[in-house]
Amino acid sequence: MSVSNATIIYQFFPVVKFKMKICAIICEFNPFHNGHKYLLKHARALSDCTSVLCIMSGNFTQRGEACVLDKYTRAKHAVLGGADCVIELPSAFAVSPAEVFAAGAVKLLSSVPEVTHIAFGCENGNKESYLKAAKILLDENEKFSAVLNRELKNGESYITSYKTAFIDVGGERELVSKPNNILALEYVKAILRLKKDIEIVPVKRSGAGYNDTELHENFSSASAIRANLNSDKIIENVPDYVFKDLKYAFHDEKKFKNYLKLVLSRTSSKDLRRVYGASEGLENKILNLANASFDEIIEKCTSRRYSSTRIRRIICENFLNLYQADCEKFLAADLYLKPLAINGKIADSLFAALAKANYPLVLKGRDRLNLGETALECLKSDEFADGQWQQIAGKTFENKLIILN
Image (cartoon, rainbow, N blue to C red; front, side, top):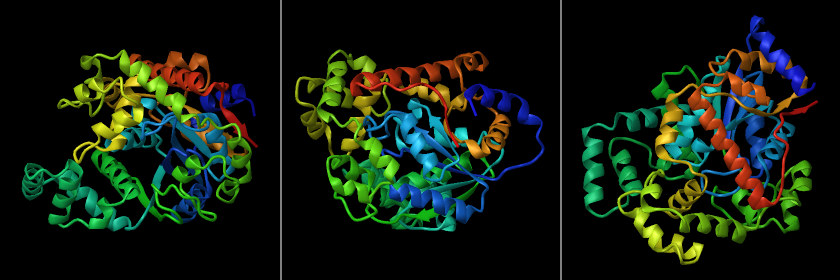
């Protein structure tokens, strides 16, 4: 099926009366590995859905890193690994704090009426515990606020203070102690906030932890794979089709850091304050270190209050011209769905389902004409990010939907 035929299909299939059951997964797949394949398989089985739809970050991640493979290659890997369709999560959300990352992704997936479930990898917990915890965090009652403020006054970091307050009002410690659990809670909060009837499907992670940088047999983290791209042991942790493409991966971290520093050196304090999380004097501290090495900037700005991930993300957002006010505007607006890869065997059914969404599909250049002003701004910010990635990586990719038969 060509992209032109796909365009015709999605324009005329809204009249189809059948209904799919779609399970959504929010992801980065940087790169796609055996653990992700495990998640896709179990998400489909546990949800009993007919299709799996992934909402995937483009070429930059929530940690403020450049992806090792371009977004179309990673989307292709996901479909080969068990997904039916991969839609891009705009960079404005993908390179943002966890709450915004989740809110943007849930906004897109919930615009598709036939998305009935959302699955996510987690370290522990079940459906009931996540719903209870999300309601506690959304409520943030007087006791929660009192404990939070007390801990902050005692000099604890915001994250530590938040955990303490959560536990004091009846939350489970483990649910705010592990990275995947914390992100999962943000997904559930976003669903509850939007009052969407979407069932959550927790899938217990298998293998290494999120931040584990050592390679293991079969199930290693994406962090470990990125840290060991030159190791032959990677072949044990990724499908063959991923391993073949990883020899073309971008992993010149020094080059990326130099680009980030160059843009930072040209940034004013006023502009850096426009970025999510760069406030309370943190923007000045970062800029005062602009002549130091990138690693030194991260080290000297990291504290109990500000994590190293937050600092890296701020610098990456600045590099990509991703500002808080714009992101909030995108969150409030009607946007679009941009498929990157799709299972050609059921493409007609999938396009029929996507055609019922509240937002238009963007498959070809002329589809831009269907977008409102704010949606077009969001799309342009993605195109800018794509250009930056290609320049840094020294690689190009065709901006065209991949259909796998």
